[in-house]
Structure formats: C-alpha cells, structure tokens
Image: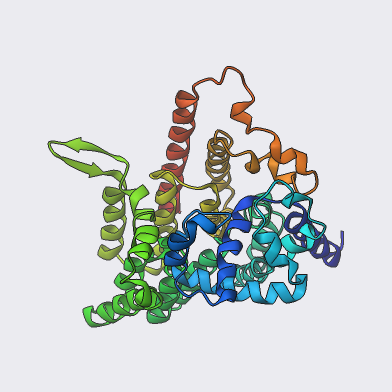
Length: 398
C-alpha cells in the first residue's frame, strides 16, 4: 500500500474513533470548562456554591491551566459545531445520546488532541537514530490501537501533558535544561505527574547554581497558573486533596507507627542513581522509570497509560526485546480496567452509535451472583508490576 494511502487510513481511523466512540469523561470536562464562556474564573468555588442547581455536580479536580485551555477551545468549538454544543454538554438526561449532532460534537471537542498528537509524533521521530528507526517510530505510533483507544475513544486530555513531557525530554537531550524545566512545569500545570521528572533535569546540570535555577524555573512554571487560586479552600480541596500524591502514598507497609511508602523508596533510588551518574544515555530510561512507577505503585486511571506510550514507542523501535514486557504491561492494565464498574470502557464506548448500549452493565456486573474479583485483580496487578520492573531493568541495561 502506498504511503499516502497508509497516512489517509491512519487519519480516517482517528476520525472514526473521535466522532463515533464516546466516554462520559470528555463531556464532563468540557461541561465544566464551558463555564469559562459564562465568565466564571474560579471553577472550583463556582461548582461548590452552585451544586444544588447544576445537572452535574462532581468537583473539577485538575489544575486551573487545563480549565482555561479546554474552556478556550469550547468557545472555538461552539463556533464550529454551533451554539447547541453548550446545551448538549449541559444535558445529563437520558436523551443526551440521541442528540442529532453528537458525532460532530465529539469530533470537534477532540480536535486539540489531533493537533497535540501531530506535534508529539514529529518530536518522537527526531529521537530515531537511523532512517529505519524513524520509520518504525512513525508506524508504531500511527497504527497503535492503544493510541486510538485512549486518546480518541476515551477522549481524556492526557495526550497534552504527554506532549510537554516529550518536548522536555527532547530539550534535555540537547542540554537545554532550563527550557526543559519550563515544559515540565507546563505539563504539571495540566496534570501533576511531570513535576516528578524535574529532578532528573535538575541533576543533568553540571553545577549547583544551574541546578537551583532549573529547579526554580520548573516549579515557578507549575505554580504561577495556580497563584490566583491558592487562597481558595475549594481549589485546595478539589486539586490537592484529590491529587496524584494521595494515590502514590497509599501503597506501603507499616514499620512501628510509620509507613514505608513503596513509591517514595523506588523514586528516591532512581533519582539518587541518576544524580550519581547523570549521563545523557540515562535520560530516557529515567523519564520512563519514574512515569512507569506511577502506574505500578498507585491506583491508576487507564488513560494514564498515555503518558507511557511515547517512551514505549521509542524503546520498541530500538529493540524487539522490549515488545514482550510492553505487551504484558498493557494487557495487565487493560485487564484491571475491564474489572472496573464502568460500562463505558468497553461496550458502552459505542453508545453514541447505539444509545441503548450505554444501558448495558459493565462486564463484571453481568455475572450473577457477582463474584469477588479481588484475587484475580491482585494476580493481574502483580503481573503488571513484575513486567514493569523487568522493563525498567532492561531499559538501563541496553
């Protein structure tokens, strides 16, 4: 098949997944972001104060920068799809899936993810060390079913911090550490996890003055968008008390009246090891290890796997030895996902095409009486951790 036809097919697949597959998360985020068009600045306090009058009352648990980004795109999307887009976002009744413009609405809302993906692929290709490797990167990404599933079917915005993280890695590999810290700060202003990568960039500097500057710049970039909200009780409750840190600090074991937190132990070991020998060849493995540990040692959301897709693509393009652990990592994660009580991760994804599919219970609820899946979930989780640690070891040894 000609190259032009393959690219056309990749684009067509993305359009199909974006327009015809639906998960409520994208509607949730854009519904809350649509308040920006009404002049709402502090989304956190607005939801808290108006819960009795809102059709959807969950808190907005993300940093404010993503509110302004999605809110700004909502304004543009309303011009493209029409003003009825806002009415559809606010409709949480049983007829919302029957909306005549639902396909157009979904497609338009996901356009920013198309744009982010284009830039991400271009940067990934630059990591290729040969023409053959660059070609593998391109095709591994363009026809990766997990990209289609997580970015366009689920429709979460995790592709945006994933993009800033890859930009930061690219800049760090060119020894542009301050610029790299800026992009990690921007990523953390969207979702918190990129800030965990900042010490790697900090210790890449050769002297302590440059390290301090890099650290300050990264943290400042993250916190500046939050400054107007730090005094808000609702902001602190929504973001900091529902943050990634709450999940990372949950796994561990008791020692006397303290706890040893697994993630902290593993994280400190990775950062200390890099600080001891901050070589360029360890940048990609260290970025990957920290990000993967978040998945291995926390109660993750399935869309967080998007954070790892760029790293996995690079490693698999370099050696087929990484393919087996990557496959087991993803299969284990998907297995855990199917055990969730969320019908929209599987059959429910097609509810925009057939709204009645949204009424089918999740897979785990179809078995009666419902069995206890705790042991099965534990086995799958253990498999995920085993292959994740194997992958991390192999990245440093290659």
